[in-house]
Image 1 (tube, rainbow, N blue to C red):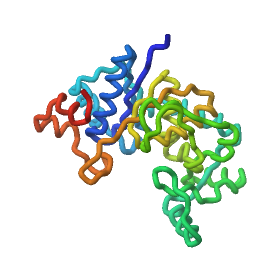
Image 2 (tube, helix red, strand yellow):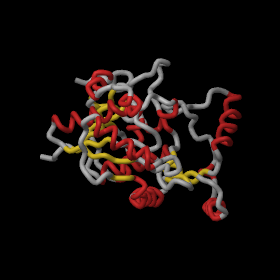
Image 3 (cartoon, rainbow, N blue to C red):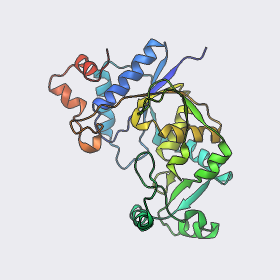
Length: 290
């Protein structure tokens, strides 16, 4: 029988907080209960925001919580070639196009469209891509790339969905609305998602499915904020011929304002709690684990 493989995959762009502790402990506990392996992966594709001190802090925080993981630690930034190979495979199937609008230009386009009614949003609330990147000729695209213009490489979602056919995944946890068991994937809700940018040769969506497959991950345990991202991941797995793990999404730790904890909102870091005298047992109770 296949040995279960789980992973905890934080980004070293800030200090871990209670939400990270829940995911890390949930992965560690499940791996141990199933006699499986726990991997640690650093999702550092945005190298401009990642810092060595944050990576060191991740190791310190996890060790303090009593979590053990296998070596070596995989850094996504050291394996861009795997994502580039996958991207080329999708391009050969005619599933990738380049867009050159900036985020500000996209916002203006959406505002113009919304004069006539609400513009569709993805599950995270961001507007679907409204530009004309698909209409550019190969010559114009190459000219702008050669000129050094900023660009994003996007997936032609409707064509990709048509090629992939119906998709689902097995949910061993629970979605935001109580979804469990076999869940129908709806990648089209995300529109033409970004697969790479000029300054970053892969996106989270592409890198995560590539790394999970290369590392043999069998069970993905993560927060409900990534529940519907699984639709995009299942689509990419089908297109690239990659295996589908079992997914288990857990509830989020919310702050006093009712929003999920986040580095961007300066959620209290685990290292601060540790220095204040909080114990690993306190953390477990605080995130609802035995």
